Amino acid sequence: MSYINLSVRAFALTAMALGYTLALPSHSYAQNTDAPTRQFSAKAGGLVLEAQNLLTAEQYEDALTKLSAASALSDLTAYEKAVIHQMQGTSLYALNKFGPAIAALEKAVASGGLDAKARNDLEVKIAQLLIVNGRSREGAEKLEKYLAAGGAFKPDYAQLLTQAWIDVKSHERALPWAQKWFEAASPKERKHYDLLNFLYNKLGQSGRQATLVKDMIQRWPQDKDLWTAWISLLSHAGQDDDAFAVSKLLYLGGAVTTEAEILKVVQYYSYYDMPYEAAQILEKEMNAGRVSQAPETLLQLATLFRQAREYGRAIPVLEAVTQLQANAKSYAQLGEALYNEGECQRAEAAFKQGIDRGYDAGKAWTLIATCRYEAVQMQEKLTCEMSETQKANAPKTKARQSAIAAFENVPSTAKEARDAKKWISFIKSERLTFDKRCAFEERVRREECFKDIKRAYDGQFVDGKFTLGNPECEVYREAYDKEYLVKEAG
Image (cartoon, rainbow, N blue to C red; front, side, top):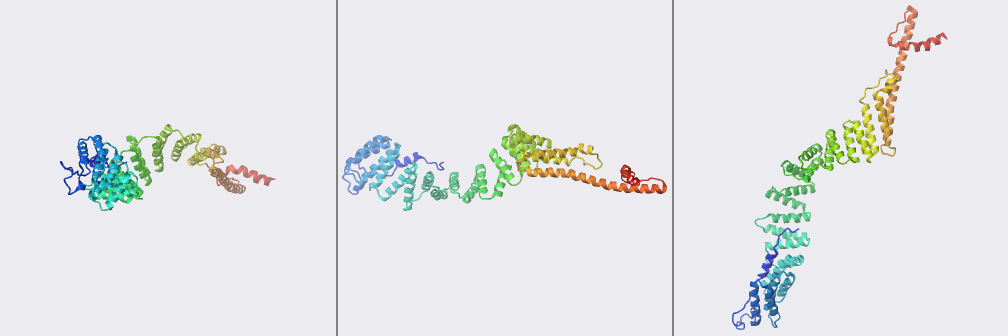
C-alpha cells in the first residue's frame, strides 16, 4: 500500500523543463568566440532549434527524428551532446518510454558538457524519475548520494526517499526520511502522521507509535480507527487496564458499533472477571440486532451467564442453541445448567441427548447420579419406628436406589469410574449406618423395657398388681416371658 501519492505526470513535466539553455544566435554560429563550448554549430543548432519548436508543439516523435539526426553529426561538442541527450530524454518521457528516457538523461550527465550545478540538478531529476518509474532502490541510492555530497535538501526529497524505501520494503531506511519529512512539514497534515504511524507499526516501535497515535487522537478525536489502534497498542504493551478503560469509554460513549468491536468489549469484561456485566452487554446487543444470534454467540452468552452462576438465565439461551445445533456440547452445557438449578429430570434428559451424540458418558452419568443423590437429601428422613415395608417404599429409599443405579451406569473405562464406586459404597453405608443405629436403639429400648417388666413382676409378687413404669414396654412382655419365664418354669 502506498502512503504517498506521487503524480507521475508531474515528474514528466519536470523532466520537460530540465533546465538546459540553448545558445542559438540568429545569424552566424561562428561569430561568437567568447564561449564556444556553450554554443551550437550552425548545422547542429539548426536541427536542435527545430526539435525545440516541435517539443513546444508536443510533436515528440518528430522532435526525436530531428534530435537523432543531430546526435549523428560528427564533431559534436560535449555541450551539444548534453543538450541533445536532455531533449531526447524529455521527448521519450513524454511518449511514456521511461527506460530509454532515463538512459538518455544519464548520457547527458556522462557527456561532460554540463557544469557542476546543471549536472547535480540533472542527477537529482534522474533519481526522481527512477523512483517514480519503479527503479526505487537505484533512484533512492542516487538521491541519497547527492544529498550526502552536500546537495541542497528539500522536503520533497524526503517524501520521495520515504516512498522509494517503502516500495522496496526497506522500512528501516524509510523511517529517517519520513521523520525529516514530518519535521519539515508546516502545517502537518494527516498524511504526515499516517506515514510515521505506518512505519512505526512495521518496525515494531510500539512506544513511539503509541505517543504518535495519542497525538493524532487529540487532533482527530472522531476517528474511531485511531482509538482502536491505541487500544491495541496499550494491550500489546501489557497495559491491559488502560486498554480496558479506553474500550469501556468508547462503548459507553456510543463509538463502538460493529459486531467485532462489541465482542472485543465483551471479551475485556470477561477477562477482568466481570462475566455478568459481559453477559448483560452481549444480551443487550443481540436483542438490538448489532450482534448476530448465531450459535457461537449464543454459546458465549450462556457461558458468561454460567460463569456468573446465573444458571437460570443460561438455560433458555442453551435451549435455543440446541434448536440451532443439536450437538453433544450444547446438550451437555444445557444439562450442566439444569443440574446447577437442581432440575434433575430435565438435566438428565439433556445429558442423555448429549451422550447419544458422543458426549463423555462417564462425566454425564456422574452428574446425573450426583443430582439424584442431592435429591435424596430433600426427602423426608426415615425413622426407626417405621416398618420394614414402610422403609422400603419410602421416597428417600427409592431416591437412594436411583442414585446408585445412575452411578452404576458410569462406564468402567471412564476416569470417573473409581469415584462412582466410592459413591455407591458411601450411599449404601448411609443406609447400613441407619439400620445399625435403629438396631442399637431397639436393643437399648428392649433392655430397659425388660428391666421395667421385671420390676412389674416383682411388684405383682408383693401386692398382686402388675404395673409397668413405661406402658409402651407392654410390646416386649411376650418376648420377656418367653425368654425368662419359660426358662424359670423349665
